[in-house]
Image 1 (cartoon, rainbow, N blue to C red):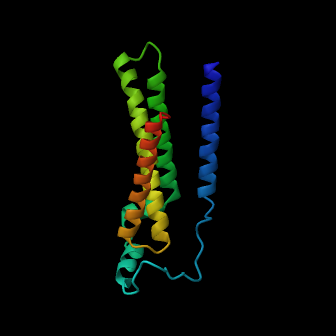
Image 2 (cartoon, helix red, strand yellow; image 1 turned 180 degrees about the vertical axis):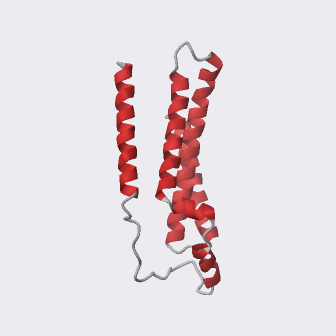
Image 3 (cartoon, rainbow, N blue to C red; image 1 turned 90 degrees about the vertical axis):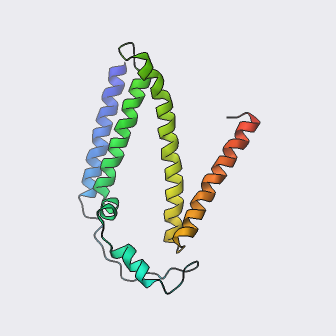
Length: 161
């Protein structure tokens, strides 16, 4: 029964990977913007040099972050890493007990890291896209993480966590 589930997961993973490669190879991202909206609120109009450096810097990290193939590969490697740690966590008698015991906290820490990073960067990126400065966007991302912490403490005090 377990082999059927693993095989089905493998087949669905290959199908998802093939679909991702197919969609990223079609060139749907190659379009030109006819008019760029001017950011409103929070920014000063005299920072043209800073915005030019941000858009036209062309650093390798920025190019990789904009490449959907690289992002898909990073996601695939992260998913495989989480899957490998999950297998170690639920593994049978062939896996040493120390490794199996350490895999649980690694899974929890990895999941929390992904969620916190996703919330902070998503909030930061959305705020920057709406015209806020870096410091304002970082404040907004930190505020969201602080709110999440307060909700966690409240749930812990009530006894739900």
